[in-house]
Length: 133
Image (cartoon, rainbow, N blue to C red; front, side, top):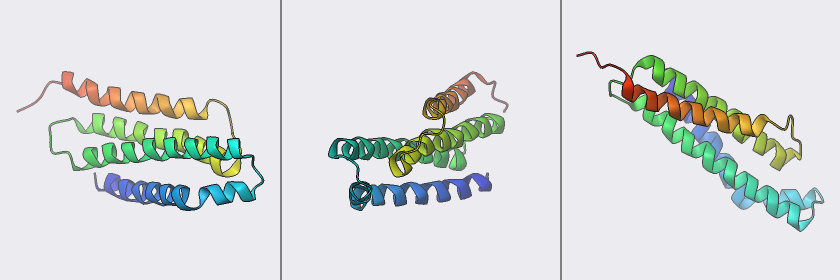
Protein backbone atom coordinates (compact mmCIF):
# COMPACT_ATOMS: atom_id res chain seq x y z
CA UNK A 1 0.00 0.00 0.00
CA UNK A 2 2.73 2.44 -1.01
CA UNK A 3 0.11 4.74 -2.52
CA UNK A 4 -1.44 5.07 0.91
CA UNK A 5 1.88 6.17 2.43
CA UNK A 6 2.03 8.90 -0.24
CA UNK A 7 -1.53 10.00 0.59
CA UNK A 8 -0.71 9.99 4.32
CA UNK A 9 2.35 12.16 3.75
CA UNK A 10 0.46 14.70 1.66
CA UNK A 11 -2.57 14.83 3.96
CA UNK A 12 -0.36 15.01 7.05
CA UNK A 13 1.66 17.91 5.63
CA UNK A 14 -1.57 19.68 4.65
CA UNK A 15 -3.04 19.22 8.12
CA UNK A 16 0.04 20.58 9.85
CA UNK A 17 0.15 23.53 7.44
CA UNK A 18 -3.48 24.45 8.04
CA UNK A 19 -3.10 23.94 11.78
CA UNK A 20 -0.02 26.17 11.90
CA UNK A 21 -1.74 28.89 9.89
CA UNK A 22 -4.81 28.63 12.12
CA UNK A 23 -2.62 29.13 15.17
CA UNK A 24 -0.57 32.00 13.77
CA UNK A 25 -2.48 33.82 11.06
CA UNK A 26 -6.12 32.85 10.81
CA UNK A 27 -7.44 35.41 13.27
CA UNK A 28 -5.68 38.29 11.46
CA UNK A 29 -6.98 37.04 8.11
CA UNK A 30 -10.55 36.88 9.36
CA UNK A 31 -10.34 40.30 11.02
CA UNK A 32 -9.00 41.77 7.75
CA UNK A 33 -12.05 40.29 6.03
CA UNK A 34 -14.17 42.51 8.27
CA UNK A 35 -15.74 39.77 10.34
CA UNK A 36 -17.22 40.49 13.75
CA UNK A 37 -15.30 39.12 16.76
CA UNK A 38 -17.97 36.47 17.45
CA UNK A 39 -17.69 35.20 13.87
CA UNK A 40 -13.88 35.15 14.08
CA UNK A 41 -14.10 33.04 17.25
CA UNK A 42 -16.66 30.71 15.66
CA UNK A 43 -14.56 30.14 12.54
CA UNK A 44 -11.37 29.61 14.54
CA UNK A 45 -13.19 26.93 16.52
CA UNK A 46 -14.45 25.29 13.34
CA UNK A 47 -10.91 25.25 11.97
CA UNK A 48 -9.60 23.65 15.15
CA UNK A 49 -12.23 20.90 14.87
CA UNK A 50 -11.43 20.34 11.21
CA UNK A 51 -7.68 20.07 11.84
CA UNK A 52 -8.22 17.74 14.81
CA UNK A 53 -10.38 15.30 12.81
CA UNK A 54 -8.11 15.67 9.77
CA UNK A 55 -4.98 14.72 11.70
CA UNK A 56 -6.70 12.00 13.73
CA UNK A 57 -7.68 10.26 10.52
CA UNK A 58 -4.26 10.80 8.94
CA UNK A 59 -2.90 8.77 11.85
CA UNK A 60 -5.53 6.09 11.25
CA UNK A 61 -4.49 6.00 7.58
CA UNK A 62 -0.84 5.70 8.60
CA UNK A 63 -1.70 2.76 10.85
CA UNK A 64 -3.48 1.08 7.94
CA UNK A 65 -0.58 1.75 5.58
CA UNK A 66 1.95 0.25 8.00
CA UNK A 67 -0.27 -2.52 9.37
CA UNK A 68 1.29 -5.95 9.27
CA UNK A 69 -1.71 -7.80 10.67
CA UNK A 70 -4.02 -10.12 8.82
CA UNK A 71 -6.65 -7.47 8.16
CA UNK A 72 -7.82 -8.24 4.63
CA UNK A 73 -6.52 -5.81 2.02
CA UNK A 74 -10.05 -5.08 0.78
CA UNK A 75 -11.10 -3.98 4.30
CA UNK A 76 -8.03 -1.73 4.56
CA UNK A 77 -8.77 -0.24 1.16
CA UNK A 78 -12.45 0.31 2.00
CA UNK A 79 -11.64 1.96 5.34
CA UNK A 80 -8.88 4.06 3.76
CA UNK A 81 -11.17 5.32 1.01
CA UNK A 82 -13.78 6.37 3.53
CA UNK A 83 -11.20 8.05 5.79
CA UNK A 84 -9.85 10.05 2.83
CA UNK A 85 -13.41 10.89 1.78
CA UNK A 86 -14.18 11.99 5.33
CA UNK A 87 -11.13 14.25 5.43
CA UNK A 88 -12.14 15.75 2.08
CA UNK A 89 -15.80 16.29 2.94
CA UNK A 90 -15.71 17.01 6.68
CA UNK A 91 -12.42 18.89 6.73
CA UNK A 92 -12.89 20.43 3.32
CA UNK A 93 -16.39 21.63 4.17
CA UNK A 94 -15.26 23.22 7.42
CA UNK A 95 -12.13 24.68 5.81
CA UNK A 96 -14.23 26.30 3.06
CA UNK A 97 -16.54 27.80 5.69
CA UNK A 98 -13.59 29.06 7.75
CA UNK A 99 -11.37 30.47 5.02
CA UNK A 100 -13.87 31.41 2.33
CA UNK A 101 -17.07 31.94 4.28
CA UNK A 102 -18.66 29.61 1.75
CA UNK A 103 -20.64 26.50 2.45
CA UNK A 104 -21.22 24.48 -0.68
CA UNK A 105 -24.08 22.18 0.21
CA UNK A 106 -25.29 21.98 3.80
CA UNK A 107 -24.79 18.19 3.92
CA UNK A 108 -21.08 18.13 2.99
CA UNK A 109 -19.76 18.21 6.58
CA UNK A 110 -22.19 15.58 7.94
CA UNK A 111 -21.46 13.41 4.88
CA UNK A 112 -17.78 13.57 5.82
CA UNK A 113 -18.61 12.53 9.36
CA UNK A 114 -20.62 9.63 7.96
CA UNK A 115 -17.57 8.60 5.89
CA UNK A 116 -15.46 8.53 9.06
CA UNK A 117 -18.03 6.30 10.76
CA UNK A 118 -18.21 3.90 7.80
CA UNK A 119 -14.41 3.70 7.70
CA UNK A 120 -14.24 2.79 11.38
CA UNK A 121 -17.03 0.22 10.99
CA UNK A 122 -15.17 -1.31 8.05
CA UNK A 123 -12.20 -1.84 10.34
CA UNK A 124 -14.41 -3.25 13.07
CA UNK A 125 -15.93 -5.72 10.63
CA UNK A 126 -12.46 -7.17 10.01
CA UNK A 127 -12.72 -8.74 13.47
CA UNK A 128 -15.33 -11.09 12.05
CA UNK A 129 -13.31 -12.04 9.00
CA UNK A 130 -12.06 -15.59 8.95
CA UNK A 131 -8.27 -15.68 9.16
CA UNK A 132 -6.36 -17.96 6.80
CA UNK A 133 -3.21 -19.60 8.15
